[in-house]
Length: 168
Image (cartoon, one colour):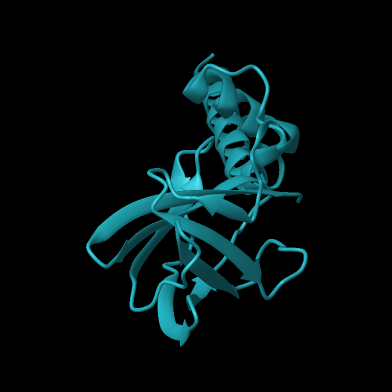
């Protein structure tokens, strides 16, 4: 009887070890397909993920307080996942004058997933005429992304958020 009990215990331990190994090896492959809808529901109270029809995906916007009119153009058209790329950000004052010498901070992430950008993009150059070079942008998966800019110029600070919906 002791040999049979020992065999059962060993069989259970080996089975549990195989299940754990399979879970950790297969989760990166199958996990996002099944976990994304569940994460969206529990993190944000949604039963359905956000679709591009529900988002303002304009590439030109007024900032939150109306101080600046901001637009961007990516060097990738269309923007794709897993590609580091640059944007040219164009900033005008509310009355249409190009904004020179602005200090711009960049942030963003995936609101439905609760994580930030995989890189640390920065404005690296004032190109003149209200244009600024933003380098180091990357989106590592499909879905809804936000790219946020905090803009300070001539004593005014304001924010703008661009929504990006990527396939993949």
